[in-house]
Length: 95
Image 1 (cartoon, helix red, strand yellow):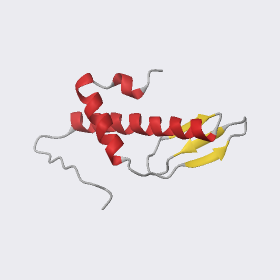
Image 2 (cartoon, rainbow, N blue to C red):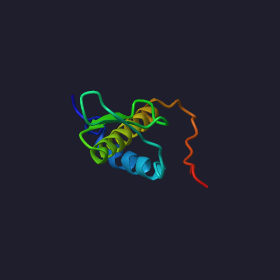
Image 3 (spheres, rainbow, N blue to C red):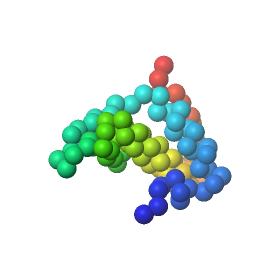
């Protein structure tokens, strides 16, 4: 199965990816030992952001990558499906 970022259009891929990186200034990651070994990492604030790794560091890196790809995909999809007359705003989450 291709990575989500691989299916994004080239024109929006970099822009969406950079927007997501800026948005994710700080997130909470839950790292749990996996039954089969290694760790399962989730980001509760981003539904579907789940990944695994042999080490905590690898699991952290993998779930952050998954979160970036997932949110970039969702952003592109929302922009493509917006209705005529929609207002698009960019706001900072952190003060």
